Length: 398
Ligand code: PMP
Image 1 (tube, protein in one colour):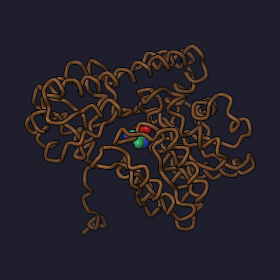
Image 2 (cartoon, protein in one colour):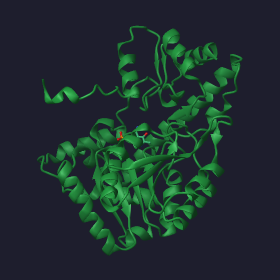
Image 3 (cartoon, helix red, strand yellow):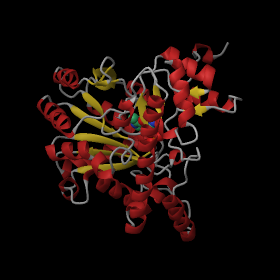
Image 4 (cartoon, helix red, strand yellow):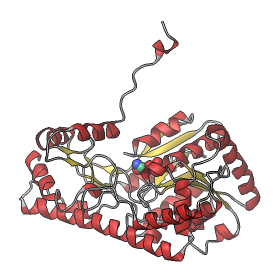
């Protein structure tokens, strides 16, 4: 008998599980479209040029491995604010926003959820249907009741915006509304700036707490363009939170580097909120890891490196767009039963392909093409060498 007899076997994470299965698949021809990782034309996770340069500088400095402050590296967190709100943001000038370094975007969501759970008497959160599954897990573990709002409409393959807006209007005051600021995971479908304006108005009128998750800034239309929703919330004067990640945009997955930003009414409130965030971090992991923050901090504060990062990001973004184009074109040329032109209009790393779970299963079994059961495919893993094969496989299972 053991105290652990009550511990049930938890199911494996479906996406990470697929990734493991892919690795052990002995077939020579196989394509991994399951996990959200950007790969180069050669099928490799890149080490960005700009990251290599920043690492070189860090190495040359030869600094000892001391602790960072609880809230993280100051040059990093100030750089994050500029990236989110713009160089000349009034929020920054007025010290209304506080930013803490986090363990990736996931860590930012977790610290934010823990903080909000302390503040709200009956914490409730709402996520888009569908969403990145960890949104639900993180907020539930922090003590939230988690619901969903309509987003993807299966029949049309588009966003059902009127239904989304109606649903938000029906929420209780202080409901935390989790929003994908750009490059929606898993659908690849984003709101227009006009639609965002309406979401901002509803959040303000109904006293909701927007929590923007931006894990793919720079992968949609560009760093500034992808911050459009955040800029609109910033201009509205309401309080909101932002979780951002550099996992993808710097290809720094394993360094766990991101940030949580809370926008407050004034600087006095911001200072109190910062103290509470620090208390959450202190009791969880004391202070964040340094290496990723040093890299990103270097780049964000050095005009030359910054320009290079913009170029690196552009290259990744444009390669993804090209792969979207190629996939749609290949399927058309093969005379696929379905029009895949919609893939070219979706943003970011993912596409909701519309494939059924049965078709996804056949893709894996018969062709070694791995996708998520929901039909989500990572277009950032396609390349000139595998896109035709992938299209042929999809055509066969349709
Ligand atoms: N939010 C969304 C929507 C994501 O897709 C991801 C990455 N899969 C994250 C947050 C967090 O990523 P990370 O913790 O790796 O930075």
